[in-house]
Length: 286
Image 1 (cartoon, rainbow, N blue to C red):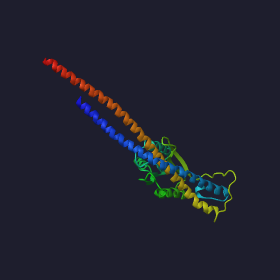
Image 2: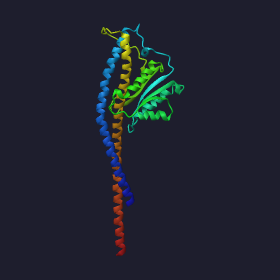
Image 3: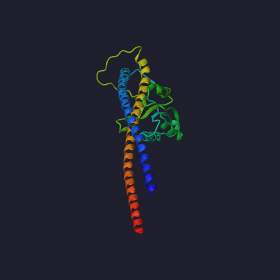
Image 4: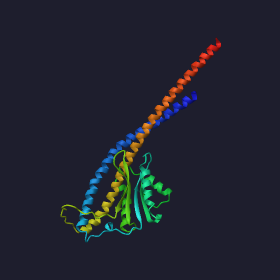
C-alpha cells in the first residue's frame, strides 16, 4: 500500500510540473497573439487598396493591357504555397491544413503536375516523408516574421508563374478568425481575375503607361498576398497554441484532482489498516 501511495504522489508532482509548463506556454502564446493579430489585421486594408488600384488599372485599359499574371492558360502544372508551423503543440493547426492540401493534391494524376513551396518545418517534413515534390522551403521563422524572411520563396513562386513553369498558383494557410477558430484555406493567387470596378472610378494618369505600372504592381501585389497569408497563419498558430495549452492545463488540473482524491483514499485506507493491525496485536497479547 505504501508503495502505491508513493507512486500516486510522484504522479501528482509530475503532472503539477507539466501544468506549470503548459500554463506558462499558454500565457506566452496569449501575449504574442495580440501582436500577431494586429499585424494580420493591419495587412488586410493595404492588400485591399492595392487590389483596388490594380483592378482599376486593368479595367480602365482592359482592351489593350496584357500581362502574364492576368492571362488564363490551360492548366498543366500547379504551384502550391503551404504555410505551416515549425513546432508542435498547436492542436489541429497543421493536421487540418495538411489534410485539406492532400485532398487537393489527389486531383492531380501525377507528382509532375505540381510543385510545393513550403513554409514551416512541419509541412516540409510531412511532404518529404511522402516523397512529394518540395521545390522551395523556408523554416525557423520567428513569431513576428518580416517580408524579407520569405521574399526569396515568394519571388520564386511568382516568377515561376510568369515564366510559365506553373499555370496556376495557390496559397494554402489557416485563416485567422479568433483564438479558438482557424479556418484551413486554399486560395488561387494567380492568374488574377479581372475585377470590374463599380461606381465612379477616379481618373488617374499613369507615367509612363498603365502597362508599365502594372508590370511593377502585379508582382508586388502577389507577394503582398503571400505575406498576408503568412501573417494570418502566424496569428492562427499562436491562437491554436494558446487554446491547446489552455486545454492541457485544464486537463492537468482535473487529473491532479482525481489523483489527489485517490491518494487521500489510499492514505485513509492505509491508516485504517494500521489501526486495525495495532488493535489486533493488542488483543492478541491480552
